[in-house]
Image (cartoon, rainbow, N blue to C red):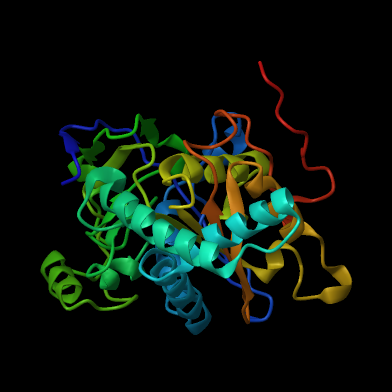
Amino acid sequence: DRGIVARAGAGDEAAGAGASSVDDDDDDVDVGGVMSVAAEDSAWQAAMKEEGRLKDYAEAAEEVGNRTWVITALHWCMKEVDAFIWGDGAVDAEVKQARAAYFHTHGDRMPPALEAQRREELRVELAAARAVVGGGTKPMLIDVGSCWDYFRRYEDRVEVLALDLCPRRRTVLQCDFLELELGPPGGPQVIEEVPAAEDAEVEGVEVEEVEEVEDAGAGPGSSSVVRPLKLVGLPAGCANAVVMSLVLSYVPTPRQRGEMIRRARELLAGDGQGLLLLVTPHSTDKSHCPQKALPIMKEWREAIEAMGFERYRYERQRAVHALAFRTVGAGGARVPPGMAPPLRIAFDGPDVDMTMPTPP
């Protein structure tokens, strides 16, 4: 089993805050959750301390989570996780890479017999590696910005670790992803108790009612109690999949968005065993309006691949871009903390700082 260290008495430190906005036009969606605030963004930190912001964020995020186009995107994520981990998705990607390497070396296609042999070897290698990632009995899926814990229904296939700034389920851990401590491989999960004052109920919902609803596996709109547990730390390389749905477009700055991806790469298993799934609205690049569309998805791909990923799958859905990236290379991210390439969005404006971080 995975090691878990519980810390009692976490103090009065706040986990952070978030905000959501909703556009009434489903073809121009602008929704999501701000995952964290970096120390240098004092103005954003001050805004997040305003009374009621966490509650507003949680209520808006859960309402958006009940929309059909969100459920469709999350279902796509799980379908890709299933195919990658339990199907031949990871093997197919590795075989494709092996064919390209063979052609580069020999100037000809890989012989079918050699390809079949390599495919079988990869099935054995990846199955063995999957069994030991993170030390658990099932592959781990980390759902960043989970709110109402959609992926819990798939616990028969994956171990779900759901995180959010202001959870709406007792199964979701409170966590500011940009403040999460990243420990060495093989280390424990570190969890703290949230002080009683922060274990707040949303008006009109009793704890007993929530527990009954959760046991029934209900969907969004049925739970309103913050879980009194906070995730403080995770070991590197512990996850097979990381999902960020409607998250990155609401992280305040390009550098913080890049750091979110860098951290996801640190947590994912390397060597083609890890999968990053991103869902972001068309308003991220204004692609809902072709004459105003920006090449932001291309920029994101280049920046994300520079951190130790390769694009595995892309699907343009009604209201969102759905992307999947697999890990390449051993170890964690190819860039150190604070050095992640920035990721811009359309609403950053023309004066946003997109300069690449420089080593100290």
